[in-house]
Length: 114
Image 1 (cartoon, rainbow, N blue to C red):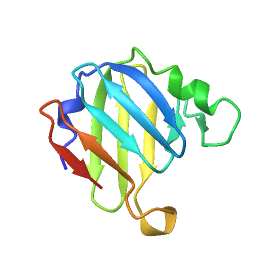
Image 2: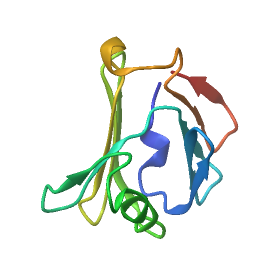
Image 3: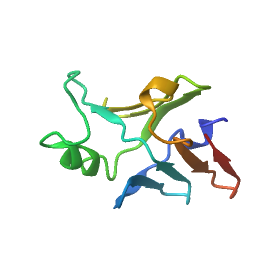
Image 4: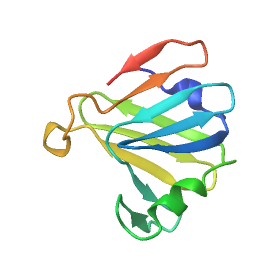
């Protein structure tokens, strides 16, 4: 799966949906995550699901632009923003509690499950 289409895209919505997270981007790309990502700011301070400030950290990314995004089969997914914040999601079997970790809908409407 190629996440390059997220490069230079602005995040315009963070949606908390019962047991998953949706990140909507300006050109209608959608990243749905069934495993909660870690959020690390430019100073390397990270916060995870359930910790104080987690939702605020995610919502603070609204309006930020993606500088780099990578998908590594069965190991990790990362999205870095121009402000230095990094979203990181482990895809290793031992870190998953669901069969699917998420899906990515491209700006062209193609959907990739992972």
